[in-house]
Image 1 (cartoon, rainbow, N blue to C red):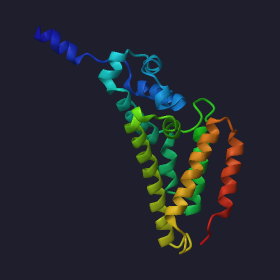
Image 2: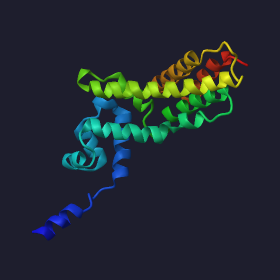
Image 3: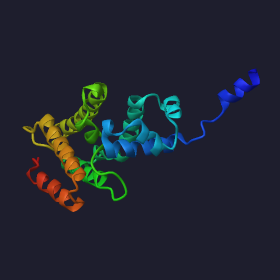
Image 4: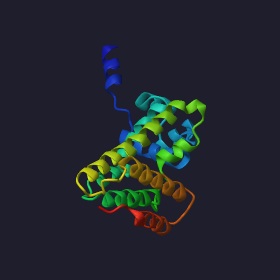
Length: 202
């Protein structure tokens, strides 16, 4: 009996966790949080509902894992953008990254975080709050970077880092919504370029 129990405990799940998370990410990205039913998720992941719960927890817990994966993968352009040497370069890299990520030829269009937040009902309150915090965290990171630009003289002394960060992130989310609506990549990039023409110079 002990041998059989030990064997069962040590038995591998029989599926690739990372691949399953990747597939779940694509489902949430395409359908949003509420549109991604458990049946659709497990079918895309190639696992049973029992296996999903055992490996990832419930749908909300799975989504939290997926959002982390999205932040470290497709949405990692934000972290890279913050390393640009100028504030203008940061803003340009964020918008270009948004356009590139939300219009991938072989993948869902739009932003996973935005798409999932747009249709989250009261039943998904915790997910909605999670996404609000996710977006706010990104805005705060941009704000801190722009504050450094003011301190370094890269932005004029009268520039408002909070307002500029909100401006850039609001543009980025707007571009993502347009991408999800089918607006072409080149047109979105033109919009991003136009928005940065009024960027404050030192």
